Amino acid sequence: MTDEPRHHARADMAWNRSPRCGAKTRSGTPCLRPAANGKGRCQLHGGAKGSGGPRGARNGNYRHGRRTREAEAERQALRALLRELRGDE
Ligand SMILES: [Zn+2]
Image (cartoon, rainbow, N blue to C red; front, top):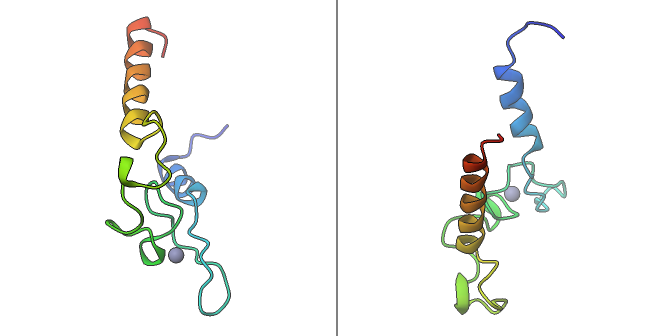
């Protein structure tokens, strides 16, 4: 182990590991831009805000509401709270 500062390295790694867009560009190579949050594509390739199908029950793939982004976020927050209350980080 070295003592060199790691904050830059860690930021670079997070960027490198983030999912890529991968859309086929006009030159035939995959798009290397990072995919937009929660979407598989970058802002230019369908990941932009407001693009895509409707959210929730108006989307054709909607089943029971247990897997919506809101429901998942709620469970995730609850799990974090329980972890905190248990005191084991
Ligand atoms: Zn793209």
